Amino acid sequence: MRKNEYFQYFVEGEDERKLINVLKSDLEFILPRRVQIFNVTQQRLTKLRLMNLKRGTKVVLVFDTDEGNELILRYNIEFLKGADVVSEVICVTQVRNLEDDLKRSCKMNQIKDLLGSKSNKDFKHDLIKEKNLAGKLKKFQFNFSKFWDTIDKDRYREIKNEAYKIKKDNRKRNMSRVAHRVPLYGHTVVSQDVFIRHQ
Image (cartoon, rainbow, N blue to C red; front, side, top):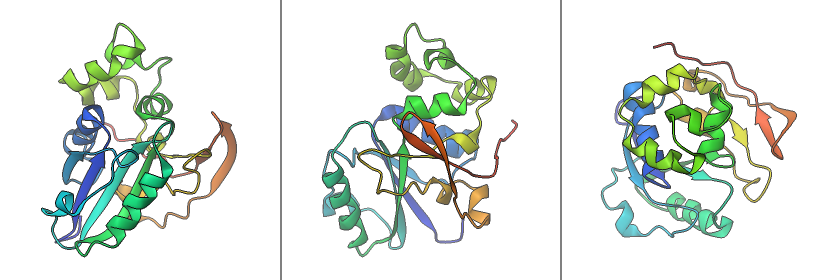
């Protein structure tokens, strides 16, 4: 991260916040900064929400694509672009949701396998409580190059997935992202250089 470069993450829930904190601290895969829970596809941002941001902050919006309101998201993007303290808005799409992104990135059949949850419905609750998430990701061969690397082809198809801008190693490359026409749950997979960190 460059000197005086600030990032603010807005995520949907406590489970995303837990994962992102692990990605930026334990695994050091993404650029560090504060993570705040705020669903940008369901709630409208206000000036009060931006009061503590430093001038030049890059705001990262992390959201699922299976729910939410595209108009609210677009309002928030434009609102942030018009804010004096914000230098850039970066959208990170979880297609269709966090669980699907993790399944694409790990070698497992069901999301409950990752933490040994009793059922897939218990996964989010278990994720929030998990104390060794980095270790569990490693156990299931978490491939970070596949995480946050899919383009939505449904309601958010016009929103670019710019996750490469917060992935540490990828920022050093010229990310001319070429989409391979590979059908995946009605979405398109985007090619990137493989990036697997061995802990």
